[in-house]
Length: 282
Length: 264
Image 1: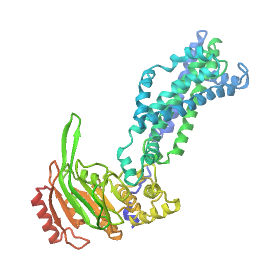
Image 2 (image 1 turned 135 degrees about the vertical axis):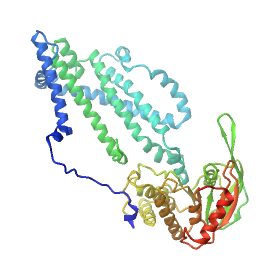
Image 3 (image 1 turned 45 degrees about the vertical axis):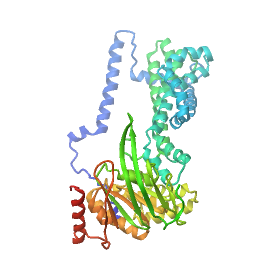
Image 4 (image 1 turned 90 degrees about the vertical axis):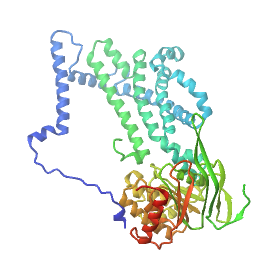
């Protein structure tokens, strides 16, 4: 019985062609390696040739690594590298969490309730086009140069994508799914609980991902303007000391840490939305 | 509100139902005009008509998802009293053309949705769901998500989900319209088997003559243009399972084609 229903079978073809040199040259890992090698070699070549003429503004890859080891072992403004990473990450996480906790419920409420929408939307539309970075000066005037002003910038920068995606997530729910709930005897509360929330989950997470990268942009901008710790501070110090290796080391660390937080969010989403796991392309 | 009158459980009566949609720009679109249909207890009634003839709207009115502009629909409940339909409810189960499964729920989660909304205990819900998953032949697929199923399997889940809520009336809105021809015939046979196992009043909307003849005790044909009107009612007194090449089957088929100018 069940074999006649399961009319979907997965076929996997194993390629039995011999490994010729031509095919090895075309494999993905090999091309990755070639690409990365060319990039680093080109970088190193460029740095060396510029360095020969005197003061280089481009550090060689190994110099960047050495600068990072140096930051790892020795304190800069009373903090080692891990301390600075944590300082920035902490700001990002606090600001991001505050924004997510505030913006997602507001976005959902706007989508579900016409009155809330009518009250919040004009204000939101007014503030939305303002670049978050433009808030830096006013936030320093309001909150001083300590943690609060940096967290504030991050909240401002992450609020918009969180809210917009939660809002759109609910608006784009297939309306007939509400009919299903009503036909099964559910009320408005069931519609929200069993359709609205789960259906908008992927969109909310897309918003959180955008917010996360926006949060890193914001924390960096805030730290570049004024900070005594954090990855942005390392970059500013490197600039002040005319040490390109330190600047580029800071940039590299930011890329790695920001990528790490993105992976964390992806893992969280996979855990919370198992139904999305096998849909192609996601 | 009509006065409560005794009627056998599951009997549907549509009296002079008309529906006019108002589109943007205040343009009125009459979709149904004076439709009166009766569906008897445990009868399998098929509404046959081409696309855009208002048959789905009629079904949605009976489901309670649309309100008729004029006229009324009454449905006899389990207590044998006919009441006017005022909104959607668990006494009617609707199977959708587009399956409309919850993609975030497994097969089991989808099927046990109705019992859960009625507040039954988790164990009881799963027991009911397992029973109907078995009835539609999906045992072993309880933990699959809808995107892992084929079209025919998805609609089996849709049918099981409705049965699990034990409605008095089953409403099916072109449920096999998206399936390929072979799966469609197979699903029609399954529909008869499931209906014979769990007798219900069934109202089945389709645009396919063969499907209508294979399934229905009676066939109501609708005119092929808006506003939708009932054209003719045919009695199909053929034993089940029916044969698509049976002489009587072909005779009624030809009769419907001639009468309704439907082209194949």
